Image (cartoon, rainbow, N blue to C red):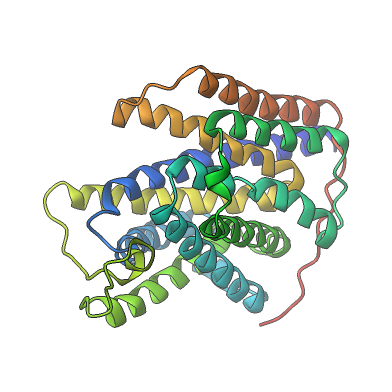
Length: 320
């Protein structure tokens, strides 16, 4: 029993790390595409590719299309609303704030997840997990060194985004008691496809564009990709399918308070992408912050393999 629990938690943590890698790839693709394409178009193409992969490969491997039947319809609708709100909020803030400061504010997500897991899932979060969250967040602050400019009204946008992502993770943990990871990934992806298609129909002609960066993240006209940009859209879609599946697997296998600190790994990954893709070599503060982030995750993983406790599995309520 103890060994099985350790294996489950370790596999869930590895899934969370894999999801962080996949989502960091999505961030890179968005950086490439956001100047020329509206958010709804990036999301639309990403959703088409991700949904195709889910339906053709991932769902058949996890049990077939019967796993899409769910008793948690209301929870999945709430998850779709939460992740849509999170994306719009974060990327709108990203358009008007410096990247580092927007990311720093958005990384409040793991802390919010840990708090919500105590309040709504009744999970027990001990000092080691709280310490991992706090040390990881300290690493983020060391890296980005947010100044007073981060606390302007626009800074509320990525914070609202972090609240949306945290809500998504808590709902995923709630639904994960009976639904497969592929099911947890399928419904938000389908929701993204429908919402982005509707946004394209409404805003695609460009008549709503204002010239203001904050609003034109959504209101820019549709533009057909050219050349290698098709490949970037495809990479975003593949990463979305993998990341969505892995994050669902992580939150259904492990307590939310355990998984949350490993989301901080996305920040050192951003450093790696900056070096490899944009030739942005980090300074000493970035290396120090990355060491704190990775160290917090490794200590949390070590602690979990030493003294695991039975994770409470909330029973999903039938709402469909």
